[in-house]
Length: 93
Length: 250
Image 1 (cartoon, chains in turn cyan, brown):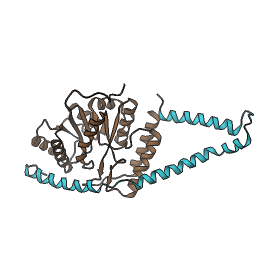
Image 2 (tube, helix red, strand yellow):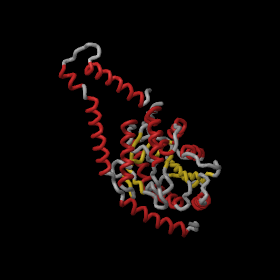
Image 3 (cartoon, each protein chain N blue to C red):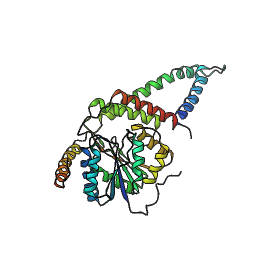
Image 4 (cartoon, each protein chain N blue to C red):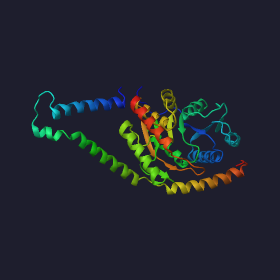
């Protein structure tokens, strides 16, 4: 099985060569001009879109990151109960 | 190599909790008390294995007192210690040699993993018959307490990067509050080579590769009650190195 790096490299190589062939027309193939014009900046656009998506996703997840107030309060109570009980049973704390 | 998430277990369930400790003299008795109470309340058969890394603060003595208090069938304090700090992986290997349960729970001994939820991991396990149940801070009502915005941002950012690069199929890779079937953990320990948090990540990634099923339960991570836990530049760099290593090798 391929490593994740391997998968990315393959994916990039595939998409990269498809883009190069269609947008840069290296072999004298002449895809229609509007198609080439649209494809040429595509990699940059995709990068920008990915960048925006990342910021939005991380921002959203940050904003919705739960603060466990009740768990913290419960923990304090459990700590009190634990210390009292352990002392009763003779543990040197 | 095929996943084992089907069928029911013939043996009655017994949970072995592995607690690696370093300087947890204050927290250890509290964690143990909470675990004992939770397990007794839920009627689950259990044992707690404390693996101390030669703590200079007397953690080992406390572990031995606890063993006397609760009995050696419930608390096992590991005594054959290597003299230097060892990465989390070897603590688990060491602990597993003493484990008599058929399920292993891994968690932190510093009270950051809220213990009453240990029971919930188990329930989820029964429900889906998973090979691994992983506690997640990022889903459901999981979360953290005591983290400032910067820390939360770093956590979410790092997790996002991990999801993009590794596509692991689990929402919280660096968490270390998990339940494993014993044979699954043994198999994973053989295959994993990283240290520290990256080791926790590697376990999940390898588990997916081997076809094991992973369930998730929301957990609360309550930042340390005693003492400070820091997230410095060094930690971030080593996390990134570890992530890239996993990216390139798995």
